[in-house]
Image (cartoon, rainbow, N blue to C red; front, side):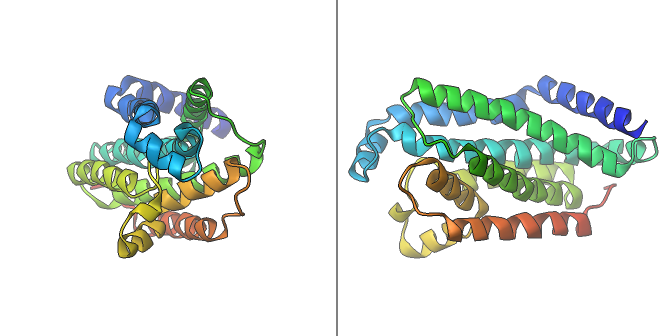
Length: 248
């Protein structure tokens, strides 16, 4: 019974996600737009070629995969959960046979399914643009899962502690900041020294740098970025669980 309830809620979550046009724009439109635009931008291409990248898309695909995780696990999940909390949807669901743990499981499964589709679309687009990679797929999947935990924790922390309107504004603002300082479409060493240190401590840069090191041949194991990402993946869900309020 519980399993069927979770699966039913997962289908509902997926249907609601498809109906939210603005969510689909963030989830698919922005990552693909960044990938296609910056892979063709002359200034980006010339800078990356000076850094040893024959094709800009080789640098961009790992960063865009990180961007896709941010858009789904933090922005879409956080905003939707925030409004469900405001309109007492979470409270009502908590009183049904679907437990709160089951609700979180359904939301997590929905996020993962969307990310699978995102990854396939991004990788297909990258291949069409000339991307090539090593065969280290399993480590890359593990890093993406770790990043999902970190960003879902951030999204749920904001959704469970802020009013819906404030959560909406902060989630979108934070997404833009992390996209700008996440090493998605330029190397972090282009930043001023102090700002680079801050950027490398953020989960966006940790995820994109980890994926880049794993998917590109010849890179050393990304110990530092993975430690940063792991710290965020532990801290954010714990904070979300501690401070999440089911009602406004």
